[in-house]
Length: 299
Image (cartoon, rainbow, N blue to C red; front, side, top):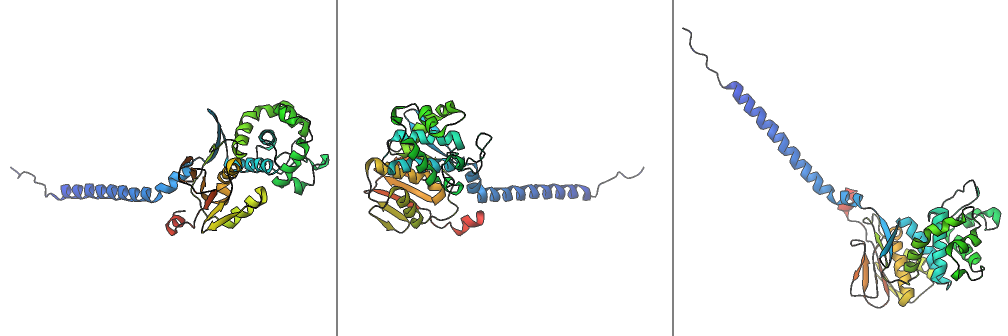
C-alpha cells in the first residue's frame, strides 16, 4: 500500500509568517496613528474651538462673533469717549445689528443701493462720502451726531429712536435686537463689570504693545501708564476702566492679546472668562509673544 502523505511544514510556516507580517503592519499603523494624533492634538483642539464673544446681563447671555464684537466695542467706546449714556450705545449697537449684522459691509440693497458701512448710511442722503462711511469711527460719530439731535432719545423705545435717525423701510425690525444691544452696551460701556468674555483660538502671530497703545489712545484718549515688555498698564478705574478692559477683550483677536487684568479680575485667552486674580492698580493688557518654532511647524 502506498505510504501515507506527510506535509513538509512549508505551507504552515508561510501562513504563520504572513499572519505575523499582517500583525506587524497593523501595530506599525497604530503606532504611527498615535504619533500623528499626539502631534496634531493641540491643532485639532484649536480647530474645534468655536470662537465667540458673550455679554451677560443678569441671567441672560448673548453671543456675537469676534469681528462683530470688535465693531460693537468701537460703537460703545465712541459713546464713552463722547460722554453719552449707555442708552445711546444700546440704540447704536441694535441699529448696527439690524443694518449690517455689525459688519463693515461695502454694498447696499434694493432700498438703498448706495448704502455702506456699519449703519448702511447713504452718501446720497448726506451722510458723507463712501470712503468716510466705510470708516467705522466716522460712521459711528455720524450716527451719534444725528441721535443726539433727537429730543429725549434716552427715554424713547429703541425702534423709535433708531428710526428717527435711520428712516428705514423696516422700522419695527430694530426692536428685535434690543436685548443683545442692551447687553453688549452695558458691558462695553463699563456699566456691568466682568460681563464680556471671548472664547478664542490660540494667537497665530505676536501682538505689539504699540498697536494697543495707539488704538486705545485713538478711541479713549491718552492716559498715564507704563510699558513693561509685552504688557501695557493704563491708569484708569471704575466704569471707564471696565469699558477699556472689555474693549481689550473684544479686540483680543485683532490685536493678538493674551490677557487683560483689571480690578481683581483677569481674562486670559486660555480660560476665555474672567476669573479672580491679584491685579495691580489700573488696567493691564498683555500681548501674545512670538509663537514657538514647534507651534509654527505644526501650523
